[in-house]
Image (tube, rainbow, N blue to C red; front, side, top):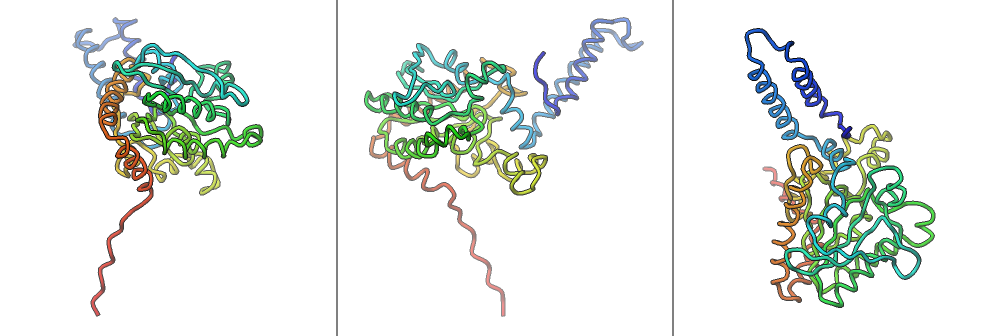
Length: 327
C-alpha cells in the first residue's frame, strides 16, 4: 500500500470508484455503455489530479518532499550515475551512514558524488539516522571533497535532510564546527561543484554540502533555514501553524528561484518524483550534465569569483526610494 497524502483523497476516492466499477460492471449507469463510463471516470481522475497538483500550497509541497517513496540519494546513484564506488569513514571518528559518497561517472565524466541518505523503513531509518548527519558525516564529506579537488574531479552533492543531528553526541563532537569548516572549504575548492536539493533542504544540515557553483532543486523539494514546524513553534507557539509558516518562509522551488537562491528548477512527473522515479532521475541527469559542461568551460579563477559573488549576494535586496510628499 503506497503512502497517501491528505490532499490526495479526492483522487483516491475516484480511483476506488473506478476499481469498484471494473469489479462490478453490472452496476454501471443505465443508458451509458460500460466502456464509455470507464473512459469518463478516467478522464475525471486525470483532470482532478491535474487541478490538485497545479495548485499546491507550500505545505503540500513540503509533504511531497518528505514522501517515504520519493527517490533518495542511492536511487540516483543507481540510475543517473554509473560505476559508483562508495568510500567510507571520516578517518577521525566513525562512518556516518546518513551521508554516502564516492567516485562515479555521469555523461562520461568522472565525478565525486556526496549525498544525505534517508531510510525507507524503521530499521533503515535507524541505520541512516533519518538522514540527519553527525559531525563525522560532514567530515567524511569534506574528506571526499578534498580528494576530488586533489584529483581534479567535479563534485556533485545531493541534498535531502531535515537538518543536521541536534543531539548531545553531535554537540560533543562539534557539529557546528564541522559544518562551518565545510562552508569555508567548499568556497575555495578549485573544481566545479553542483548541488541538487532532491527532497528536504533543512538549515545548516543542507548547507554543509550546499556551497556550490550551481544549486538546482527539484520541483517539489524545499530549501529553508528552519522547518515549517520549527518556525511555527517559535513564532506562533504552536506547531500546528506549520502550513502558515511554510507560506511565510518562501521555501518552495518557485520562490527560491525568484529570490535567486537556486539556479534552476528540475521538473517532476505529475504527482511528485515518487510517481515515476526513472523520469525524475533522467531529468536530474540531463540537468547535471548541462550545468557541469557549462561550469567546466569556465576559467578556474572566474569560477571561484562567481561562486563567491553568488553567496555574497544572498540576502541582499534593493527597495525603491520612498516618493517625497508634496509640501
